[in-house]
Image (cartoon, rainbow, N blue to C red):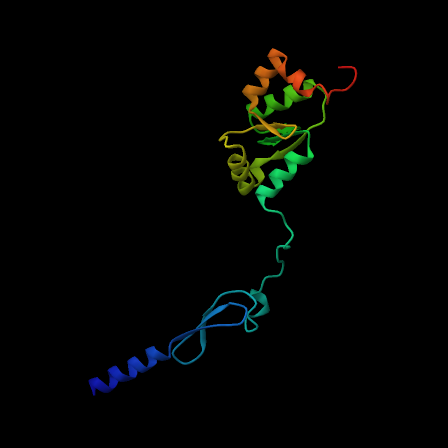
Length: 167
């Protein structure tokens, strides 16, 4: 009797199988042949309540590509905590104030909104802190460096071809 029961249990266990659909969705079938678990995906047997409603567009650039594009397309790019009108830290506020002294247009991104972007910027510049300022495609540094450049006149020289005529 015990041997027969062990045999039945073994047979049931062997019927527990895993299968993959053509779309790569793994489905686990239980002892009775019914699906017990499945991943959400393109599985036609997944109820519509559990299928993705909005899929990320395939043409969305990676965070690294976004950083590269920002730096290439903007003469002055500032990655900061907050936005120029409302900086969220004193160092970011200082960077904005120094740049505004020169009346040059600059672009800024709030790194607090996107952790992946923040990490990509740190990796790109090999600099761990924010704000980070790029001028003419080159990483300059943070607020302390831009302040020193401002005080020494080096920033004015760096920005001379971007300055308004009357500056």
